[in-house]
Length: 274
Length: 298
Image 1: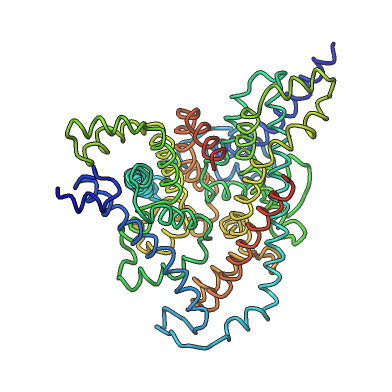
Image 2: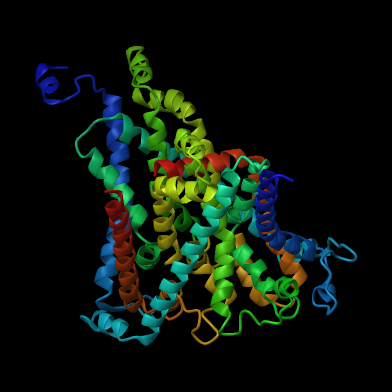
């Protein structure tokens, strides 16, 4: 074999080892979620379940009411994504296409908040929500997320690619600015909208600390928090918890596999530009 | 439209709808970022000089007492040291593994590029609480996958020698794919003729990597280093799910300690003082990374 071939084998071997490391925890979780508790804690371990059972998923969805948490998380993530996409797009548009005094100051102020660690603002925010009487209410989750600096930054970049001539032509035709943004510019931002939809959805889906602090009643709880709550309460029901964990992970993985090209493009472009 | 207004405004064609849209958006932006970032930072700073307990409704000025207590708190310094060590190792691992795999994927000897890339990025997109939970079970001394694979009998989460390593392994596993994707993107944006010229001149793969790829990739590497440091300094969920700071205080990280003070003990003033020190450290570190990179470029 030539030197080239050996090199190719070596490189592929390294890549395959890391692939195995990446995928094994997921496969183990999936396999365990179809086992019985007795089989999971048995001395003689095997990777695949002996008699695969759906029982754990039934338990997780009904007994642990994970169906409700799933729906809660899904609606939370959808609402947050829709709102932030719209607010980021309109803010990005204004900060990109309009010239006015203080524009760079406002934009700089927004960018600077990206550097602020959440741990500094979370305590005062908690007190603010308490003072407003918003604890345990949905708006406590929504209002502090109405705008995102990352989204505004990203949308401003995309708006820069929209030619000014298009806006001018619409203005000459008598279109007002609301029409121009909603009917002309927004459709042209579809690539940025798609990547932002993915990121915002994922972030909201995995959000933990803030919803944990805000939401107290069990019926309003989100998936991640429920998962951590139940890992204490049902600590011996390993199989049920594996099923619950799979319920939190599998939808995200499926969504990722369907849209994976967009994901990768989105993440790569945000870094190179940033 | 009268002439006077026209001469005042810099853009004579500015329409009413533009002014309404602009003012609404800018006003909401200023209001939002003041209310949820700048005012909270001010409150946190002001609160750090107070005995502040929201459950008891206390907000009493105590001067420098919180700061004094924080700076004399052995556990806080220990948690900062832990956080620093944890972050340095996690960032290094992320960069090294990221560079290794990205250069392997960059090579034309590898065919299934997008397959590998898609796979490596998978842990990054999955929710932290859920994967931390899977890893907690993988570390189980009785049925955990890790001991079975390694043929060891380590009690990962309850043995002080291994607990921090356990948190690191989870963190590295979850995050290396992000570095691979970003670095690979960076490599594709480099000028190809450099590589071709070097290859013609007989530079081997190693020389090409350290002589061309790495220096040209510095901005991308710096981007990952800074963003990783900022996020690793705030590591919370892995500690909460895996060890709760234990065994003993072995895996106390600064953010975990702060949240514990804030939301278990409701010592808001004390926690605010700690969070401010962490904030300053992050800002300092960011500034240093920027300066370090700037100097090398000259």
